[in-house]
Length: 229
Image 1 (tube, rainbow, N blue to C red):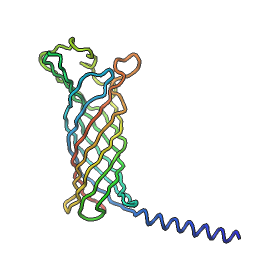
Image 2: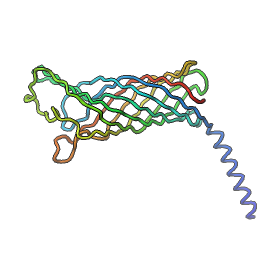
Image 3: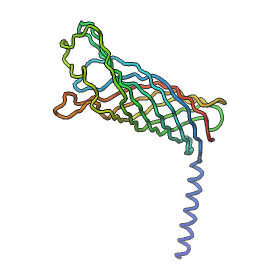
Image 4: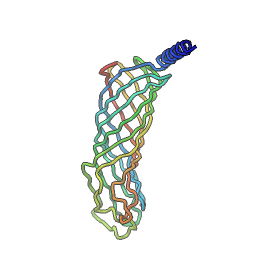
Protein backbone atom coordinates (compact mmCIF):
# COMPACT_ATOMS: atom_id res chain seq x y z
CA UNK A 1 0.00 0.00 0.00
CA UNK A 2 2.81 2.42 0.92
CA UNK A 3 4.61 1.59 -2.32
CA UNK A 4 1.48 2.44 -4.32
CA UNK A 5 1.13 5.76 -2.48
CA UNK A 6 4.77 6.66 -3.19
CA UNK A 7 4.42 5.76 -6.88
CA UNK A 8 1.20 7.79 -7.13
CA UNK A 9 2.87 10.78 -5.41
CA UNK A 10 5.89 10.63 -7.76
CA UNK A 11 3.61 10.43 -10.81
CA UNK A 12 1.60 13.39 -9.51
CA UNK A 13 4.78 15.46 -9.06
CA UNK A 14 5.90 14.56 -12.57
CA UNK A 15 2.51 15.57 -13.93
CA UNK A 16 2.58 18.92 -12.08
CA UNK A 17 6.12 19.61 -13.28
CA UNK A 18 5.13 18.83 -16.86
CA UNK A 19 2.07 21.10 -16.64
CA UNK A 20 4.15 23.94 -15.11
CA UNK A 21 6.79 23.56 -17.82
CA UNK A 22 4.07 23.92 -20.45
CA UNK A 23 2.65 27.03 -18.78
CA UNK A 24 6.05 28.59 -18.16
CA UNK A 25 7.96 29.02 -21.42
CA UNK A 26 11.54 30.05 -20.59
CA UNK A 27 13.19 33.02 -22.31
CA UNK A 28 16.73 34.41 -22.16
CA UNK A 29 16.36 37.70 -24.01
CA UNK A 30 18.76 40.46 -22.89
CA UNK A 31 18.53 43.91 -24.50
CA UNK A 32 20.33 47.20 -23.96
CA UNK A 33 19.82 50.73 -25.28
CA UNK A 34 19.04 54.28 -24.32
CA UNK A 35 16.03 56.43 -23.46
CA UNK A 36 14.97 60.07 -23.46
CA UNK A 37 11.90 62.08 -22.65
CA UNK A 38 10.21 64.80 -20.62
CA UNK A 39 9.31 65.11 -16.93
CA UNK A 40 6.24 67.10 -15.93
CA UNK A 41 7.04 67.96 -12.32
CA UNK A 42 5.29 69.13 -9.20
CA UNK A 43 6.14 68.67 -5.52
CA UNK A 44 3.70 67.58 -2.83
CA UNK A 45 4.17 70.20 -0.10
CA UNK A 46 2.49 70.47 3.30
CA UNK A 47 1.68 73.29 3.91
CA UNK A 48 0.93 73.72 0.24
CA UNK A 49 1.04 76.60 -2.22
CA UNK A 50 -0.10 76.99 -5.82
CA UNK A 51 2.10 75.36 -8.46
CA UNK A 52 2.22 75.10 -12.22
CA UNK A 53 3.91 72.29 -14.15
CA UNK A 54 7.69 72.35 -14.51
CA UNK A 55 8.75 70.59 -17.72
CA UNK A 56 12.30 69.20 -17.66
CA UNK A 57 14.46 66.58 -19.41
CA UNK A 58 15.20 62.96 -18.55
CA UNK A 59 17.56 60.63 -20.41
CA UNK A 60 19.81 57.66 -19.78
CA UNK A 61 20.69 54.01 -20.37
CA UNK A 62 18.31 51.02 -20.30
CA UNK A 63 18.82 47.29 -19.81
CA UNK A 64 16.08 44.65 -20.02
CA UNK A 65 16.01 40.91 -19.37
CA UNK A 66 12.98 38.86 -20.46
CA UNK A 67 12.97 35.60 -18.49
CA UNK A 68 9.79 33.74 -19.40
CA UNK A 69 6.37 33.68 -20.98
CA UNK A 70 3.65 32.69 -18.53
CA UNK A 71 0.27 32.08 -20.16
CA UNK A 72 -0.01 35.14 -22.46
CA UNK A 73 2.26 37.44 -20.43
CA UNK A 74 5.89 37.99 -21.41
CA UNK A 75 7.68 38.61 -18.10
CA UNK A 76 10.86 40.58 -17.59
CA UNK A 77 12.84 43.12 -15.58
CA UNK A 78 13.95 46.55 -16.81
CA UNK A 79 16.64 48.66 -15.12
CA UNK A 80 17.62 52.21 -16.08
CA UNK A 81 20.33 54.68 -15.05
CA UNK A 82 19.03 58.17 -15.84
CA UNK A 83 19.83 61.83 -15.46
CA UNK A 84 16.49 63.34 -14.48
CA UNK A 85 15.50 66.88 -13.60
CA UNK A 86 12.78 67.49 -11.01
CA UNK A 87 11.58 70.47 -9.00
CA UNK A 88 8.63 72.83 -9.06
CA UNK A 89 7.30 76.02 -10.60
CA UNK A 90 5.20 78.33 -8.47
CA UNK A 91 1.96 79.86 -9.71
CA UNK A 92 2.19 83.33 -8.18
CA UNK A 93 -1.03 85.32 -8.61
CA UNK A 94 -0.66 88.06 -6.00
CA UNK A 95 -0.26 90.80 -8.60
CA UNK A 96 3.47 91.25 -7.93
CA UNK A 97 4.57 89.88 -11.31
CA UNK A 98 7.06 87.58 -9.55
CA UNK A 99 8.08 84.19 -10.94
CA UNK A 100 9.91 81.35 -9.22
CA UNK A 101 11.07 77.83 -10.07
CA UNK A 102 13.46 75.30 -8.57
CA UNK A 103 15.45 72.84 -10.74
CA UNK A 104 16.77 69.71 -9.00
CA UNK A 105 19.10 67.38 -10.90
CA UNK A 106 19.13 63.69 -9.97
CA UNK A 107 20.77 60.44 -10.98
CA UNK A 108 17.93 57.91 -10.81
CA UNK A 109 17.73 54.13 -11.02
CA UNK A 110 14.27 52.56 -11.50
CA UNK A 111 13.87 48.76 -11.12
CA UNK A 112 10.75 47.83 -13.08
CA UNK A 113 8.98 44.48 -13.34
CA UNK A 114 7.54 44.32 -16.85
CA UNK A 115 4.66 42.41 -18.44
CA UNK A 116 4.23 42.36 -22.21
CA UNK A 117 1.19 41.26 -24.23
CA UNK A 118 1.23 40.77 -27.96
CA UNK A 119 3.80 39.63 -30.49
CA UNK A 120 6.17 37.12 -28.91
CA UNK A 121 8.90 36.55 -31.49
CA UNK A 122 9.96 38.51 -34.55
CA UNK A 123 8.57 41.85 -35.66
CA UNK A 124 5.34 43.22 -34.24
CA UNK A 125 3.73 45.24 -31.44
CA UNK A 126 3.49 44.58 -27.71
CA UNK A 127 1.50 46.34 -25.01
CA UNK A 128 3.62 46.83 -21.89
CA UNK A 129 2.81 47.33 -18.21
CA UNK A 130 5.62 47.99 -15.74
CA UNK A 131 6.03 49.04 -12.12
CA UNK A 132 8.60 48.96 -9.36
CA UNK A 133 10.78 50.92 -6.92
CA UNK A 134 13.04 53.81 -7.87
CA UNK A 135 15.96 55.39 -6.05
CA UNK A 136 17.74 58.64 -6.80
CA UNK A 137 20.57 60.90 -5.64
CA UNK A 138 20.47 64.69 -5.85
CA UNK A 139 23.47 66.08 -7.75
CA UNK A 140 22.66 69.79 -7.73
CA UNK A 141 19.81 72.29 -7.51
CA UNK A 142 19.21 75.88 -8.56
CA UNK A 143 16.66 78.61 -7.87
CA UNK A 144 15.43 80.85 -10.67
CA UNK A 145 13.36 83.90 -9.74
CA UNK A 146 12.35 87.15 -11.35
CA UNK A 147 14.39 90.32 -10.99
CA UNK A 148 11.51 91.94 -9.13
CA UNK A 149 10.94 89.93 -5.99
CA UNK A 150 8.32 90.48 -3.28
CA UNK A 151 8.10 87.27 -1.16
CA UNK A 152 6.69 89.18 1.82
CA UNK A 153 3.32 89.20 0.05
CA UNK A 154 3.00 85.39 0.25
CA UNK A 155 1.99 83.12 3.12
CA UNK A 156 4.37 80.19 2.44
CA UNK A 157 7.95 81.46 1.98
CA UNK A 158 10.14 78.93 3.85
CA UNK A 159 11.17 77.25 0.56
CA UNK A 160 12.94 80.36 -0.76
CA UNK A 161 16.70 80.03 -0.39
CA UNK A 162 16.36 76.68 1.36
CA UNK A 163 18.27 73.87 -0.34
CA UNK A 164 17.34 70.21 0.10
CA UNK A 165 18.20 68.64 3.46
CA UNK A 166 18.19 65.10 2.04
CA UNK A 167 19.95 64.11 -1.17
CA UNK A 168 18.73 60.50 -1.29
CA UNK A 169 15.30 59.98 -2.85
CA UNK A 170 13.10 56.91 -3.27
CA UNK A 171 9.59 56.10 -4.41
CA UNK A 172 7.44 54.02 -6.74
CA UNK A 173 7.24 54.27 -10.54
CA UNK A 174 4.75 52.65 -12.88
CA UNK A 175 3.17 53.06 -16.28
CA UNK A 176 2.26 51.56 -19.63
CA UNK A 177 3.36 51.80 -23.22
CA UNK A 178 3.72 50.24 -26.66
CA UNK A 179 6.75 48.40 -27.98
CA UNK A 180 7.32 48.12 -31.73
CA UNK A 181 9.78 45.35 -32.63
CA UNK A 182 11.59 45.91 -35.92
CA UNK A 183 14.57 44.60 -37.82
CA UNK A 184 16.76 47.45 -36.56
CA UNK A 185 15.75 47.25 -32.90
CA UNK A 186 12.86 47.75 -30.50
CA UNK A 187 11.16 51.11 -29.94
CA UNK A 188 9.12 51.74 -26.78
CA UNK A 189 6.82 54.73 -26.29
CA UNK A 190 5.49 54.96 -22.75
CA UNK A 191 3.88 57.09 -20.08
CA UNK A 192 4.98 56.70 -16.49
CA UNK A 193 4.18 58.21 -13.08
CA UNK A 194 6.64 58.59 -10.22
CA UNK A 195 5.35 58.97 -6.66
CA UNK A 196 8.07 60.08 -4.25
CA UNK A 197 8.00 58.54 -0.77
CA UNK A 198 10.92 60.45 0.74
CA UNK A 199 10.83 64.15 1.65
CA UNK A 200 13.81 66.24 0.56
CA UNK A 201 13.25 68.69 3.46
CA UNK A 202 13.43 67.49 7.05
CA UNK A 203 9.95 66.82 8.42
CA UNK A 204 10.18 66.61 12.19
CA UNK A 205 7.74 68.54 14.38
CA UNK A 206 10.28 71.36 14.62
CA UNK A 207 10.51 71.72 10.81
CA UNK A 208 8.20 73.87 8.73
CA UNK A 209 7.26 71.39 5.99
CA UNK A 210 5.57 68.14 6.95
CA UNK A 211 5.87 66.83 3.39
CA UNK A 212 8.07 67.72 0.41
CA UNK A 213 8.12 64.84 -2.08
CA UNK A 214 8.31 64.65 -5.86
CA UNK A 215 5.33 63.78 -8.08
CA UNK A 216 6.23 63.39 -11.75
CA UNK A 217 4.48 62.44 -14.98
CA UNK A 218 7.00 61.07 -17.50
CA UNK A 219 6.76 60.68 -21.26
CA UNK A 220 9.59 58.59 -22.67
CA UNK A 221 10.90 56.97 -25.85
CA UNK A 222 13.32 54.02 -25.48
CA UNK A 223 15.41 52.26 -28.10
CA UNK A 224 16.65 48.70 -27.35
CA UNK A 225 18.61 46.17 -29.38
CA UNK A 226 18.80 42.48 -28.48
CA UNK A 227 22.11 41.01 -27.34
CA UNK A 228 20.63 37.53 -26.79
CA UNK A 229 17.32 36.16 -28.04
